[in-house]
Image 1 (spheres, rainbow, N blue to C red):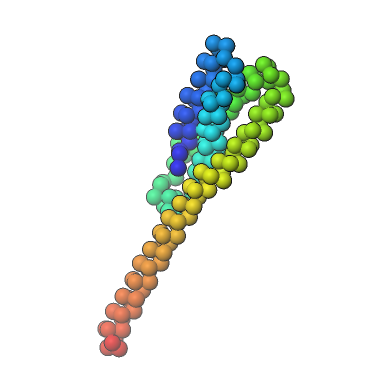
Image 2: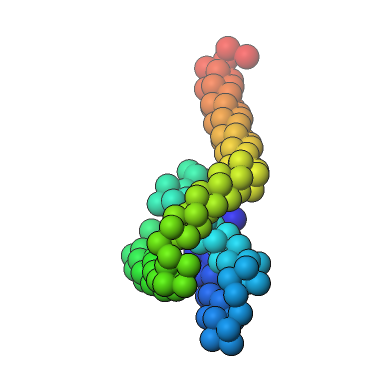
Length: 159
């Protein structure tokens, strides 16, 4: 899974490319790739933020709770919102407010497709790992219980 810091890095590089393109007079249609990359990074950030709030149990056990992570995510969230606001302002100024609404509709469609493809695959992998860890824990517990019962029975002379 992509962590929030990586998502912010990808979004920042795409945003800088968009700003540079705007400053040299490129049209937004020419920068569709950068806008798409930024939208994907923004979507990945939101997904990673959600997953970091409620990680799978096997990740929660291995990673200690860290308040710095929450502060970093908050700071990155504010940075992503500022980038989004600047892009919105530019699109609304150049193409009008209705253009931003179109961008939001396209972004929602992209997020839905991304959720169906990439996020679903990620969630399937996490589910498989969770099941494997759960089954292994159950088998270890059952083995320990069986050995304890066997030792107690052996000491009482029942076996």
